[in-house]
Image 1 (tube, rainbow, N blue to C red):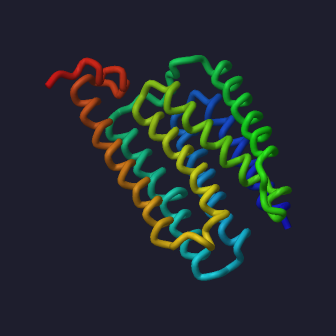
Image 2: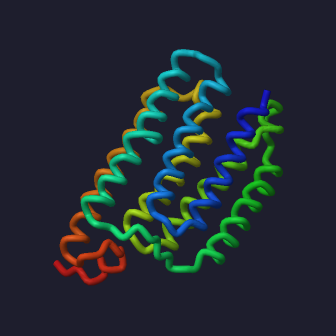
Length: 212
């Protein structure tokens, strides 16, 4: 019963590690798109083909797997952003911190008082690990678009938590989370555009130079 969802969770973890260690921006955007696409299948795998699960899966796939990655790729092209990622810390330290965060998430999740149907599932530890990886990307990447990727991965972790509660949560609440994510991407696109126009760079450290 848990084989396919657990396989998806392992893929999510591998994509997290890949994104941390990759220096190619386009590859990272495609990896985030793939991650969003595969986790959009979870509502159907966990809750069956109920109307609620189908709507949630389709909405998540369209936003996470198609719409948002296309917006990011268009922003990269229009702003002339360099395709190489320049992290505040090196790739090896990033991978070490990512591995430690993932291991800690699994250890912590193993100590939680879970329901019997969730004991052998990897959804909870993977969601916690994905939250940690997203936060790590937010604080260790210089460029705004890389931080957007961190935000998207962070939201993927929240989505994984929400899938387990989707039967108890109203559809509008979950739709609101997805729409908030889309709005945040538009806002970050505007921010990247203004930073690029003012400084010919989208390094967020340039925001410190702004004056009223």
